[in-house]
Image 1 (cartoon, rainbow, N blue to C red):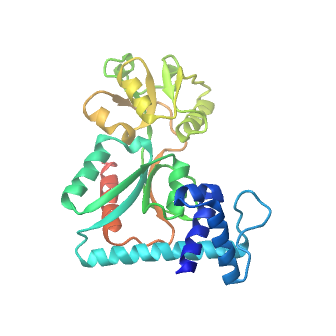
Image 2 (cartoon, helix red, strand yellow):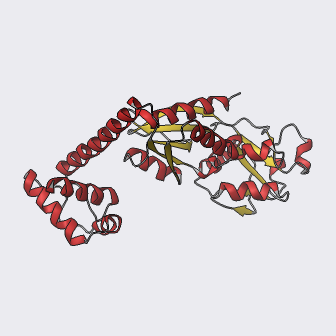
Image 3 (cartoon, rainbow, N blue to C red):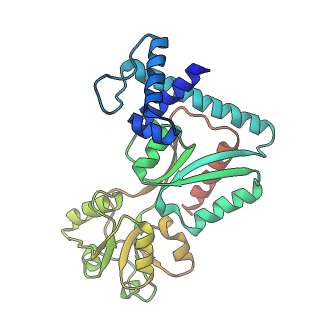
Length: 300
């Protein structure tokens, strides 16, 4: 039992990267965490953390111990899920992480419909950046993640990928709606609201700009997809998003989506991800199947 506590403290310190952050999360003193880790090292007969560092840096033995405990957590979670499955998945909790762009009416309706069919299940939805979601999936903090395109990750499995080309988003009264396609040169003549450089959307636009010899200078820059949608739907600004990020606004005609005249060198995709090697059971598996079916409908 004492070693269980020590293992948990060690795991949180390694996950957080510092004993101070682990202390804040666990609600215990830093000295208690340090003492438990020393006891765990004595029990195992090896150093788990490199000495003389302010941050927590794992030794090779420490990484093995960390991976072992993470596997135990996942297996215990799977056991609970299997037991819930035997009971007909009437109860259970699901941890899901999504990017802000998925907070649309289509997503809310999907989750609401799932709740109505499975009233005993609870869903904890975390909203974060793509990098945050990937880390949460890798560390088993969530069962699955929904992100807008990621580079290949060794610890992440892409369960389903759905292509979502970038579209020019404008208010129905905007003059660009008179066009069947919009070139980058035409787009550059209007007030734009775009994400910062470094975001996937801007990276793809930069590739298109280089190929077309055009340049886009946004009047507004924001990391919030909600703000991009809202400013475009008010009529003054034009933005660029995949359709999934504006399903609700497109459905109620607050926005109109117009394709680019240029070919997109690297189409955007929506990825449903889980940790590589993690087998979801019970309630999480049920939501995973629901999301996979919903995502496939986005291609029609």
